[in-house]
Length: 225
Ligand code: 5RP
Image 1 (cartoon, protein in one colour):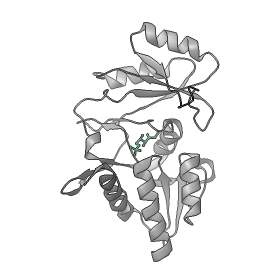
Image 2 (cartoon, rainbow, N blue to C red):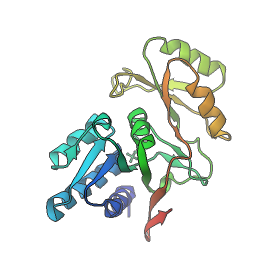
Image 3 (cartoon, rainbow, N blue to C red):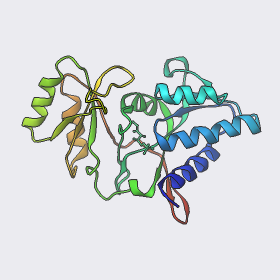
């Protein structure tokens, strides 16, 4: 199976965990796209009723088009389960997210969920976090100053640009700065430092947050709980 087939496999496996009449956080990314497709099938074929709380405009549009009822995080009083992708998961189940520039909304939805599930193909499982650049969502105003501060601390920042060379914008119209760290030995310390910097709205380390991981392996999905 290639990477896309593994993503589809875990997306289809994940929706088996969704129960009728529940509120489900819907992450963002190519793996989640397969999951939302599979959820749409269940809604249509089994008459399953769920409320989906999307973490991006992209996911909201897809879920709505499949007949999944969509509400914003502020319109629900709880979220039973959030299913999301990840960019890297370490051996001790910490994560990096934000490759799709959605980690602010993803973290808001995840931290308001009773349970969090990540779905990934096996290439995302690593020993130590950091090979994948760590995304930061930053307010445009003063972002050059934030950048300089991060560079002076040897955190190897780089503004994320689109093909036209313009700053990538999040759904909140903020910029993304990626930190090219190679290895993150102390994720909790780094997260504490980053979130204290004025102008950084959210950082992409998702620590002590996940309850279930489904890994797409060549011999089938592995569920880690
Ligand atoms: C978006 C994310 C995604 O979950 C992460 O980038 C994984 O994406 P994909 O499933 O496309 O590999 O954090 O901000």
